[in-house]
Amino acid sequence: MAIEGQLRTVSVVLLVTLLLTGLFFGVGYVILRRQYTIVLTQKQTLMTAIGGQLRKEGLYMSLKDRIAITGRVIDGQRSWLGVLDLIDRVTASGKRTSFSVTENDPVSLTMTSGTLEDTFRVVERILAEVSNKTIANPILESVQYQKDGTVNLSVTFAPIF
Amino acid sequence: MLRIYQGFVMSGAILLFGTAAVFFAVIPGIRATKDLYDSLNVVKKETQALSGKLALLEGISEEDIRDRLIILLSAVTPEKSVPTIFNTVEGLANLSGVSIADMSVMSPGSLATGAASRQSATEKKVGASSLPFSLNISGTYDQMRAFVGQVNKVRRIFNISSFDLSIAPSGVVQVRLALAAFYQPLPTKVGSVQSPVSPLTQKEEAVLAKVIQYPDVSQATTESLTPLLFGENRDPFAR
Image 1 (cartoon, rainbow over the protein chains, first blue to last red):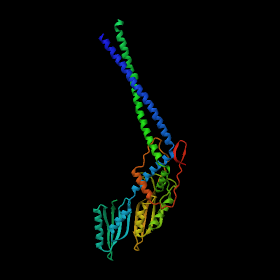
Image 2: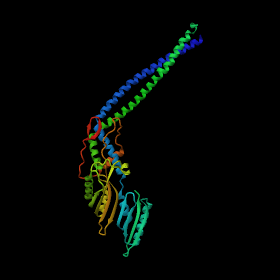
Image 3: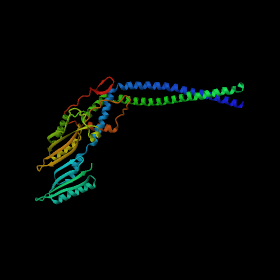
Image 4: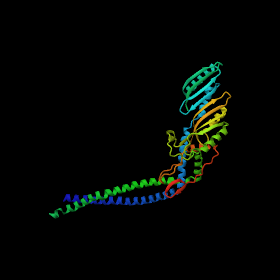
């Protein structure tokens, strides 16, 4: 009889638990369903409103896209004026005859100095620029001492941007 | 005998029914409620994003976007636009005082977008096609410096890839420059309605401000933007 009583209690507890759980989740489901429908309607309304702004959205996306492209192009531009300033600093009193600057290659500079001392000063200035980390890998390509006392100097170096 | 077990039968039946109800009704019910809750959260987030997108779109004037876009389209044109290159170089020469000896656009190809042509690694990095051209100019050293200094700061954006300079005994400087102009067709489609739209970042605003500051030394006019829409096709630039 005691076992029967316990079994009855357990079954009643189970029934009550089932009822309460079902009620809790049933009510919860109905509330959530209603919220879901409301939010879905809001979403639909917003999507319709955004669809009406299609032209503006297209222009705006194009603007963003073009800004990104333009930004990358500008970032890729190098300050060649800085390289010219560097060449001016290196040559100083010397007379430049030619130089060639390429994006990925070193600067090739040919210049004429009045005296041998001036040529040495050019080399000193190049070394000073190396110390300042504005020039890398300077190479003396040729030095020609002319009959009139002038010196033709040819150097290459990599400007550091 | 039956009377003895009658209580057990009733309780057992209730227990069996209860167990079956747990597996066939309660657990699926909980699962359905949880799924609905998750879906609700997703839709809420989407709605929030859409609300933000709509607020952003409503907060900016179409005219303002159009004006800014026209400026940017004169910097990186939608087509090769060779005349604007010539006009800009001519304008630059006038500003700096150098004389243009010759100018040639390398393999201009199709006069339109050239969209089918294969892009180089640099072009892919930039996200636009480049149109290389070379230029021979002459003048004084200061004029040449002014030209080189200005060439990166005009509305039609150029990039110098190399230059060779030689100074004659008379002091006349001759420079051969290799440059590139950039072009990229406008996107023909916008994303779906739900695709996010973010406001302009500080960096983007800075790029825009920089380009607006650059003088437009070209005399060419930019084609007016009149995007048209056809039915369901989300192509704001379809013609």
